[in-house]
Structures are given as C-alpha cells and as structure tokens.
Image (cartoon, rainbow, N blue to C red; front, side, top):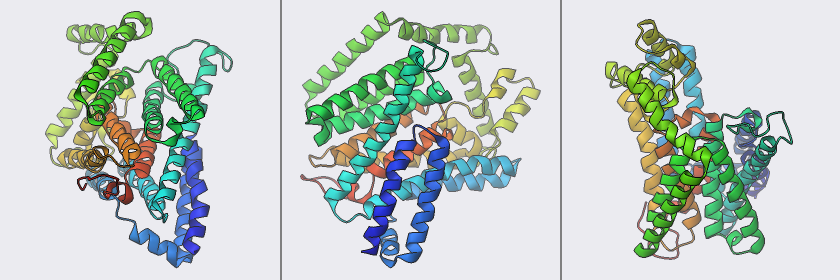
Length: 427
C-alpha cells in the first residue's frame, strides 16, 4: 500500500512535467528535480516502492540511452576543455534520466488498464502544453500579443523556429495516435478537440518556415502509412492522395513555394562561392568540417565538447567561413556524434534508434491494444532519424526531453512484452 501512496504523489508531478515541457525549460527542469528527489525519498522510506523500482528498472531503452550518455562522458577524457566536455555530456544524461523515471513509474503501476489510462493522460498533458504554446503563437502572429504581427518565422516565447516546428511534429504524431487508437477518437468532443489541435499545429509548422520539419513530417507520414496500413490498395491510395496534397501546397502556397525553391538558389550560390553565407551552404560546409574531425580521430572523435574549439582552429587556418562560428553543432545528429565521439558515439546513437524500432514495430504489426503506443514510438523515432540528418536534435533541450518523455510513455516492458489480443512476435 505504501508503494501505491507514493505513486499517487509522483504521478501528478509527471502530468505537470508533461504540461510544462513545451512551455518552459526552467519549469520542466525544476519539476524533474523535484520528481527525482521525491522518488529517491520514497525509495528510502517505502520498501514496496523500492522493490517496484528494482523490479521494473529493466526497460527497452534504458541500456541504449545510458550507453549514449556514458560514451559522451568517456569522451571528456581526451577533450581540450573538461568544462566544455561536462557541459555537453550533462545534456545527454537527461535522456536516460527522463526515460527511466517515466517508464519505471508507469510500469510499476499494477494493472494494465490503469497503466494505459495513465499513459494516455500523460500524452494529453503534453498536448495541452503544446496547444497553449500554439495558441500563444497564433496570437503573436495575429498581433494580439507582442509587436510583430505577421512576422515570420513564427517563434512564440522566443523559441527557435526549428525547435518549435519539430516539437509540433511530435504533437502531430501524438494527436494522430490518440485520434486513431483511443476512445478520444470515437467521441464527438474528442474528435473535435484533436482535430482542432491538428489543424493549428499544422499551421504553426508551416509558419515556422522550417524545411527540416516539413521534409521530416512528409517522410514520417509515408513511413507510418507503409507500416500501419495493411491493405496495399489503401496504402497506395493514401500515398497518392498525400502526394497530390503536397504538390498542391507547393504550387499554391507562396510561403512553401519560396522556401522550397530557396534550396536550389542556396546550392547554386554554394557552387560558385563555397564560403558564401546561406542555410544549405552553411550546413554543407559544417558537415565537411565534421567529417574532417572524424577522419582525424575515427574511433573516439575529437572529444566531447570540442566541436567548437575544432571549428575555431579551422577558422584560424582559413578552412571555413567566419559565420560558422555562430554554431555549436553541425546541424546533423550523426556527424556530431561521429566528430566528437567517433565510431563509438555514432554506434551508441544508432543503437537508440535500433532499440526503439525493434521494440515498437512488432507491436504495431499486431492486432492488439498496443497500437497507440507503438504508432507514436515509431513515428517519434522515424522523425528523429530523418530530421537528424539536418539538425542535431539531441543537443536541443526541449526536443531531447520530449523524445525521452514520449519513449518513456510508449516503450515499457508491459507495452513490448507481447500482451496483445492477437499473436505477436517478441521484441
């Protein structure tokens, strides 16, 4: 009974954490600290809670996320600046910390039905926080608040527009999963609320002007159609209709048309002057710089936290343009891991995505009740895999926290242990 009492205390904290994630970095950090201190105190006080934690600590992504964080800390050993190394490595420790907290607390809840209800409530709390942020964004764009009416890119609360668009992409997948696979999608009120969220979130992604998010959402949607739609004719029809819709948006929405066409002009500028400042050209130069770092230290990289010092050294040698010194990562999650932590870092990163898909895909192919969590886990992993080619998403707190939170809700022992209505291959 003492274990249940502690769960009743900790669970509202998780709801507040999910609500605060899109709205405030400071609030989410404070809540995370309070939750961990409360869980630690509960484990000391309650033998039952301590037993629950030890019994349920083996979760699908615990080892993968912990390994990724461990590699970053080991990389500090050969860093030029230990302070910079710890600053970067301390970012990544939040991945296993948040995932472990959410997954273990949900997993420790006795009763599958109660655990599912709590998982849905946590996802709804995340959507509520994101909906509040989007409403603020819409009011900002309309000039109701702030003094920059109709200014683009849209970035409410000063959040970077690329972070904002990718966060909304996670919201799209969450709302779609709740609409398709829960009771909220069968009620008129639920369909109306989730539908309004989907429309507003889609509009905010467009107004963010982030081509990274646009491209990643389109590809992720195509992947989800292939994975989730069993009838080939339906799948082909869905893909064709999506292609027509995307073509229409490109043709008739000037914002999208201009942003997409800018890719060609950026590439043309890069081909004539490799040090000219442009979005695509800057990424290409940074990717080349990151590959150069990896070639010089292929196994362990240049060291955790040493990406910026290496860029500065390259600038001194006139190998890169000055404007690249504004960035602390190469806008590529794979090249960042490879450059700073070598093959070991890249392997640890890929292991996270492998374990995510290895746990979720078999459940998505079943006919059981786990499709909600499997759908969301696959969509989240697919988005990070795709968008990771254009941005170092784990370097961004709000996206790193959201990834760990969503995966903690979706990928737990109960959700991946084959407890479904139909036959299902083991994860």
